[in-house]
Length: 343
View 1 (cartoon, rainbow, N blue to C red):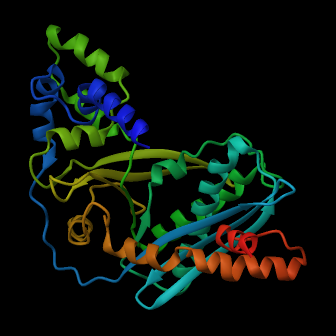
View 2: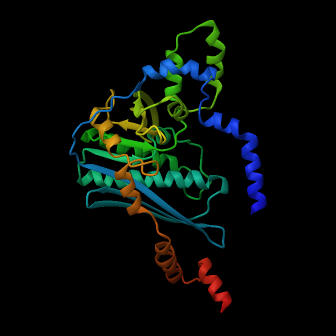
View 3: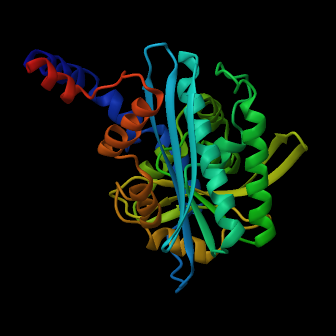
């Protein structure tokens, strides 16, 4: 262990400057000079303080996977949409063969699909003022459509897209904004907007051309250039979702929040069924509901706490029920196996 830690420290010392520069823009870099002024013009530090007293619902999901000895996987997916004391669940249990390269993509789609169904259940009975979702709307609308290597689910993207479309349409019909919040993001939409906003000089052209080719994202810019709490200018984005009912166009607005300059940015996508800016009360609740770097939203944190599969629940309830009902003993926890071996 000491040997590997020593190697790790050597790695950090050798690559410290490169890693740091990829996380935070150097103060004397041409990149900072390029972005500083245009960023300042498009970063808003006047945070709305709207007393809202609104009903806020939040949705999150959880998963657990066990590989069985025949190579198939037992998959359990659970989602909750929570509004006060009301809880609307969606549960997907599967025993299925999934190609190893497709496992993560399939699980992500299943979890998001379960969330969409859970939210639709809530919207059948309740009308919250806002519905918060952990994640990004852009990733869901633009989900890759290549066939999955998963038995019976090869064309799952069709069912996934249809359910997502129903959710977006129902949200617009009820005038209930969907507010998607993500701690991590690959978005470069704001960076591209800033590059378009820059005044062109001959000296800048080469730098701007190089910037278009980099993979640095919006969060890198916000963390590097923002010196106080605020949010980036909301930008409207239009995306096409292909469903079995035809191609549908949806417009949503994106901003990046920095509730505290010592913490990390949060990406917020807002879909309200109409074009326009993100309303002040949505911005207000996003900043008010921020906890800390680990709790980017108190309502989402509560939904996560409720929905999360606990180890004793999985091992003591679901797996024991699986063995009892199927009649094949095939699962032991590591602790139980060690105890049996010792005996």
